[in-house]
Image (tube, rainbow, N blue to C red):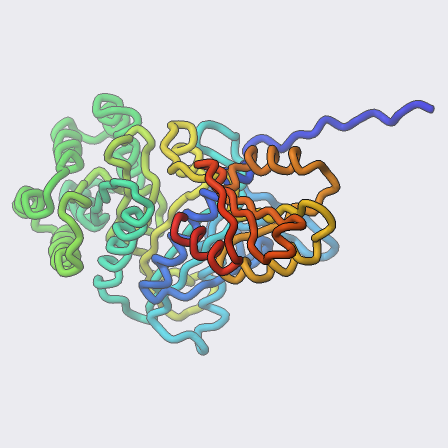
Length: 437
């Protein structure tokens, strides 16, 4: 009989699949981010991965439309969500009467983009978003709170970061003052300056028929970067345009709130090169970089948008939010050997029967599992092979249950790291394990 041809096991390009030992670290990072959001009184939201296309594509346009996973099933025209912001907009528009504003929500979930896989780019990725949405109005205090949460998240992740902050109204107003009409094209070029360099940016600006003088002025203003007060002092005399003054006043107000949050001044700076290309950002914008690895690029970004749900409701819902691309961040940390050391298993204790004592082992598992991660090795294999497997999994403690242990109710507890073993009651075993973990 001819065997069927085997299918080669593989995953799609652009999708991440982690070994359990690394998934443990990934999950712990999610736990830390979740706890930080919840400590700030953000509530969880979990929106569907699939949305109606008319919902998900209502405000996308441009390159995003080309990347969306878009298909039909029966009579439904569907898309897989490409971020967590549009589903949030749909949710607040649907439920505005029941929501108490400001609405502070976090969502940690997967999003999908059918873009070309490359370094740092995935087709399936986990986003960790936090947004504060107001009704009609939202004070700038919310912007400061998002920056505060970013500082807390990365402190809790034990990553030293620098948050670069700006306000788009400064550049909008400055372009108005210079009588520049095609502001969108100018900001698109300036947004790329850290990638293409000053000279290439200037050449692209000149192609828009900007004067040499205006090019130099734009390149100067986006070069301003550093201590908040020092940079504000440099910005103050540059323009009297109303939009520019609005942005300057917003930056000054934001700075007061950031200081009130007592964020370490070494963790943030004012950086006019932070523009964030998305059209929906209207004021505060920010991006976060690892101090030790600025070449990683931004690992967290966000900002202020005036009307989150404008495609779904006539109600004005201004908001501010942050987003961490956790899949990309994890991949960068992993490839650069920056992941925290962690055991390849969550198991702290494995119970091994030495003879026909499986029921007693299960009873002991029930006892220990109330306080720590515990399992019974009930495979029909030799004791030696079970011990070898426990060592391979780096389980720190083994509890042996044989005839002597069954009769005395004192169990052999072996520390797999030191090799030390003792005969103890189950209560004393628990104390010793807890004291040494």
